[in-house]
Length: 249
Image: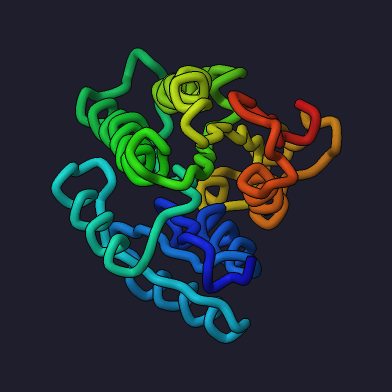
């Protein structure tokens, strides 16, 4: 099947980091759309990079944790074409803090974006892809985190817990829609060289890297390869999988 006959590969939070890398990688094989909340300049740069490489890209401004904004985003996508893949990537950390100092406002924002936003995006994807709703099937890939396994004490237990919710959602939703042509998996990245890590001191980073058996941070391109593979027919018998990409940690 040629690229122009495929549905869109949609990524939430696609203007930078892992999301942008997924967009660039997926554009080799699919028309790509991505949601972004504020970073218009970065979103435009991703679109231009994809188009320069001969791909198709659509940047849509949408806040996934706001249902009205999210629905407007999906309505814009519907005008462009059908949906084939959703990557639930958009997320926030809520800042570094211990549980005994975390604020209610930080918790609300983390769960609004990371959990509620991912659920709402998955809901809309299922409504469009499920054979139960007249769709042609598809794939959902959730971006979780190694934090859901390790807990991230003294950093962001609140963020780790939100990613634990994504792990649970992945398992449950995969079983719910397996007979409707949709595969649902999650990738749990470890320490990856993104903007999130650049706020750490060199000493902190080195300590974290020293605990990784592969001895280095991962790259966004490496995570994108795993994400895109899960969306391809090569992973056709894989669903409900929580795939760790964290250097052996």
